[in-house]
Image (cartoon, rainbow, N blue to C red; front, top):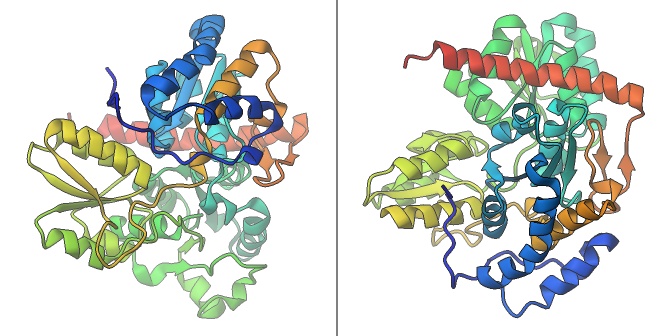
Length: 435
């Protein structure tokens, strides 16, 4: 059963990338795509079938296509049409582990998501990303060379009292840090479970990277706001004694929130929430949004939660949704089939940037999907698109820092440990929940 309805005459809305944005190996596919007479599904599918179907026949059941909910409408539709899975970051991370028969995994999303899949993948599974330039601004503000100096200072002061909880939107190198320190990975759907678990086992937690998810999760758990400290936005080297309140404030706190954020979600305000509520709309929002907006909303949760709310809303419902624009557009199509009206939370008269989408994730497009599958079938895929645990990619130059085998095995073990702790926490919570 498909979740993403294809309207025959609906143009596919993603902006075409300039030709020089494509890797050399992908330019022939991009040239063909850009020469198509239109972007309707009939035209795009006819062109894509010439590349995707031979690859599907070649790899058979060993091939798995994946995309994230935030991808542009056509990619989620294409991936699902060709038998792939569309999910949130938690569900994507489990795909290799839960599908050991899938040897070739092709992901249309961002690099940290593909790396998370690779961390849990078996030795006989390969993970490929359709465009290695697809990154995450939040992850860029929490690189290991930025976080480790701060962690080292905190660890020198607090020792084993401190552990790291790494949001999924981090590199494998930070997931490994979480594993080494007795911490875990979390996602927006399970952050409350993982943070509660960590606070029960450690006196202090460094939550990396999203300050807003950290604040919203701490509030949800009823943690003392006086014992919560938001670190400055990551600019240059931070000396911990220079935080607001100095070392005394650090010593009072038990939760340290890395100061980065998601540019897509920081636009939401309580004024936007009230605008829709005053007109009779129910407001749902993603927890990467500022705390004040989340508290004003009628509900908050991950992409899976938001999607389910539209699926389950009774006909006649009106929902204003605060999250990534491509996701909201797909939710609008879902809602329209069910008699549910969906609007973007920022689509208000006093804000000019309604419908903000994740620009970096949208760097995955039909030419990248066609090219990746065709090149894999031919046995000539560019190695830059292969994703291994610990890889660091420069999104502009495409230069890559890849660990040697011994370093990668050590990192993978630590990162996998942090992710398996998350899985254990989530599955334990499910097992204890009343049926």
